[in-house]
Image (cartoon, rainbow, N blue to C red; front, side, top):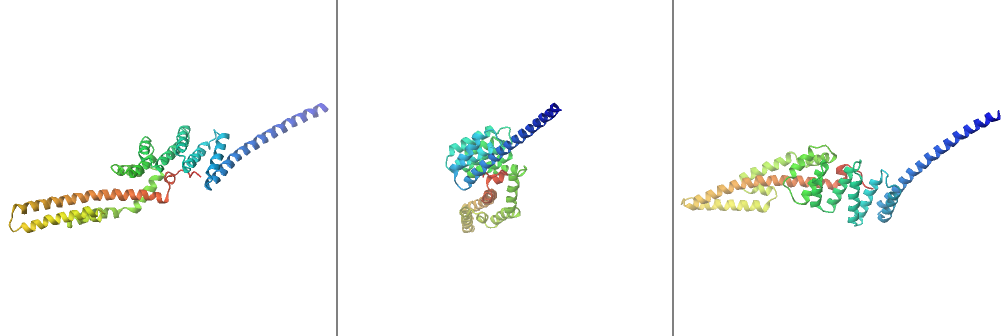
Length: 294
């Protein structure tokens, strides 16, 4: 009987040990996750308060303890941003480029490349950023290249880039489409055709409407000068009369052509101004729908 009771006691003790070990391992796991979050929360608090040195130290502690954790990439983003804020541009760049390599085949690969492109744009490295973004396939990099080209004053294929972006599906497409729709629409067409009509009535006036005051005034004075010569020489029908009339006709045709060209430039300038205005109320991170760093 005693032997039977002893066996029962051993079995019960065994199960109690298993339950204890199981509960202990769960507790350790919870505390580990809790500690990770605490380190990040403390570091984020330092960062928001402008204590960047202590924030960086806390983020380093996280990477030292949990180098393979899924949050390690986001922590690297934070360190890079802090180095950028402190003027340590080389270190910021180092962390961002390393993050691109480490995040390959992970959910952070697109975000790491976008953050590198944003970094280059904010550092005004537009030429380098243009080349980097052109080597990427996602539509978000077309958006970055629109901003790069505006900064570089390169307008040749801006409208094509904008059309490609608007035809794609991403958060940036929606924001840009809304901005262009709010600022343009029928008003843009009215200005375009109105300027051409005005130049047809009074040469040069359409270009003045488009903001080209000097060129518009010069066009008007040139046309008026040839008209005046034609009027003076009209009674004698001298070669000057025919030359003045021919010059006046060519000048008029040139006036219409230059107004059409100016109207296209005007549309491009207004479109670019609307796109730049987006950054008055949004960050590039907002535009791409990626989380704020802190």
